[in-house]
Image (cartoon, rainbow, N blue to C red):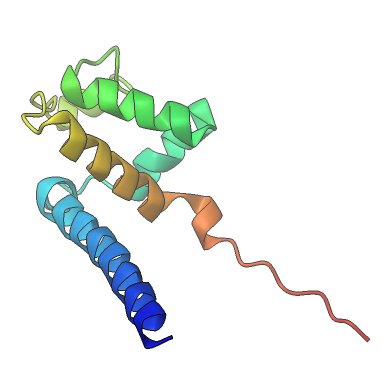
Length: 122
């Protein structure tokens, strides 16, 4: 029994640790520049959500933009690029980039922020 509990705890902490590392890497690789340039990441995610509405499509579009940034591939309006420079193509490997995109979507996805009030049972 103790072995089962130990294995369960190790699996839980390894999964929690991996997610924590992804969020730290996301902050370091992406969000720090957004904050420095005062580009609101939450608003950008909302724009993706309004246009594409599916998190899988959002992930694909973000990936395509980060691999080959262009004003045509961007979700932002053309005047945005008068104030902010076009991003350089990502030099991250595909696996890391996918992890960062997943962490970004998980961080800003509105479904994660919805709280459902449990029904009262009499």
